[in-house]
Structure formats: structure tokens, C-alpha cells
Amino acid sequence: MDSLRDVLFFLPDLDGGGAQRTVVNLANRLPRERYRATIAAVRCDGPMREWLDDEIELVDLNAGRIRHALWPLRRVLKERGPDILFSTILDANIVAVAATQALITRPQLVLRETNSLRARGDIGPLRRQLIRWAYARADALVALSHGVGRELAADFSLTSARLHKIWNPVDLAVVRQYAAEGAPALEPFDGVTLVAAGRLHCQKGFDILIRALGALNRPDLRLIVLGDGDEALALHELVRTLGLSKNVLFPGFIENPYPWIAAADLFVLSSRWEGFGHVLVEAMACGTAVLSTNCPHGPADIVEHDVDGRLVVSEDEAALAEAISQLADSPELRARFVAAGMAKVERFDAACIAEEYALLFDDLLSSTGVAA
Image (cartoon, rainbow, N blue to C red; front, side, top):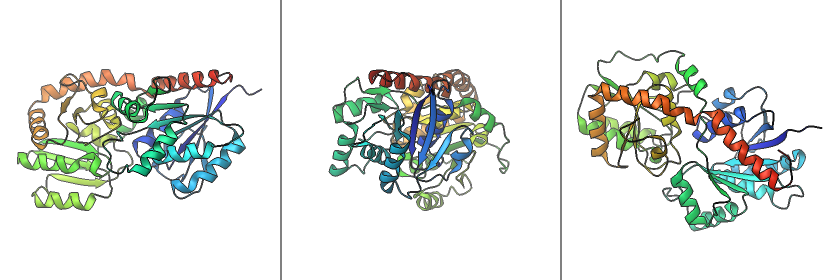
């Protein structure tokens, strides 16, 4: 008799976002003597597909959009009868809960909240009611940081028995392997190189970062912004307006950003809000000093101020500019941050975090009488 328990991970796609990286890392690192991982995706395209271990089955729901995935996902649940259904990303979580309703054999439902819902500007009354309905039906809800957990408990009346704080899993060995694949082809620059990465979206605060750089008026600073998104044109225009075209580069989405991060003198996260700040851990693993806004929520779970990185007030261009200037002028401080950061990131390694999830799954299944 097959003693492995089945975990079905539900994702919109396999793009290079933090949620997708988390699920791929988790699926790859779940203890295989106890769990068998499968990923069901609305669309199976995206660069993270190449990161999946060969043993992980990928089910294409071929639904096009998340809201069209309800019935294809429900069909997969009926056919396969997984022990655990794991979903992340807000709209996917709502669809996952809806797909499990009135099933004869219902999986244990684990939802992961990736962001501060209070900080988002797109949660209207109807959507909030859908979130409340969905999260009330989860067997376990995972928050990425202490701050997100506190918000969820207060805003949706979640008990501590169902709410769990588990950090993002980062496959440190893979990050370091990819970082060593070769430095990016860049024009020689006699100065300090900053790098930032993420979707070009209001959340990430790249406009704040660019304005902070403009306020410094230092030609010895170069900023490289990795990523693409809806704000690309506006950010390019802001750079032109501030006269920074020679000092701010937009290479676009880079499938392997780690050589770029490793080659930089300083990684900057300028977000208005986060759920965790996955890329901060990756930058530390690459051996790059980090500077981050202390936004809600996550960076303060990762960075200890002036020990292994620096935290500044969120949405404060002057504070960010001052910190950039100070760190640019202090290679000794950056080196101290690098050494401390390299030691700290071990606690976020995918194998450690995957075991935390496995223990959560064990508890859920034991409560239903299913041996894990």
C-alpha cells in the first residue's frame, strides 16, 4: 500500500514571482519519504517550470485565468483525492476554497497569504467578504511574517490554532549556483552599483527609489532595476525627467537575476508594502549588502537594523537617499552586513522551511485520522 500522502499545490502560473518561487521550492524540498507533491497550474508557462524537479508532476488546468479554473481544479480534486490542497495568492485562495465545497472527500485546505491586505488598495467590500468567507473555511492559514499574521488575526477573527507563521523557503544552494553562472555584460562603471528587482508596480516603490537617487545628484551611483510591469513607461519617464538616464538602467525581466545581484555593491528594496521580502534573503545569499524600507510587513523579520542590513522608514525619499549615500561611502559597513547576512540566511533555507510545512501537514492529517 502506498504510504505517501499527496499534496496538490494550486498556482496561477509558473512566472518568476515570489509566490511561484516559494511553491516550487517547497514542492522540490518536501520530505519525499512522507509526501508526494503535484502542482496544478492555471497556465503551465513561465520560467519557474525549469526549476521544478523531474519527480514533481505538473498538471495543466488550461484555464487561461484564475476565475476560470474553479471547475478544472474541482475535477482534478475529484479524480485525484489529494490529502492536502495548498494555495497561495489571494484570488487563487478564493477559487481553491470554492472548488472544495461539497466534495465527498475533501482535502485539508492550507491557504498562504502573501501580502499585507491592509496596505493593498484593491480590497473593496465585496472582495473582503469573499476573503472572509474563504479564510473561515481553511483548515490552516499561513502568514509569511509576524505582521501579516497579526493583521489576519485581527481583521478576519482567525484563531491562533488555525493561523501559522512560516517564512518563505529559499533554495540557497540553487541561488548561489545561479549567482556563479557569470557576471552580467555591463559597461564599466567607476562607482557604486545598486540593484533592485521586482514587478514594476506601485507596491515596489521604484519611483521612490529613483527620486531618492535623483535627490543625491551623485554621478558615482548607478541603479539597475530588474523586472517589468505596468509602471515601466512611467518609471522610464521619471528617469528622463530627473536627468538620470545615464545612471538608471532597466534591463527588463531577467530569468536569472542572481549574477546581477551578486555583482552589485548594494541591493535596495524600496517597497511600500510586502508580505515577506523574499528577494532580501536571496540578495543576502548572493553575498550582497541589503538596504530595505521597514514596510508592512516582512523586512523586519529578515533584516536586523545595522547588524545584517539597514532598515529605513517606508515611503520616505529623504531617509532612503541618506541611507544609500552612507552605505555607498562605507565599503566596510557593507562588508559587515554581507558577513552577518550570509550567516543569517541559513534559517530560511528551503529544506528547513519545507520541514516546517511537513510538520503542519502532519498535524492536520493526524487530526483527521490520516497517518502522515
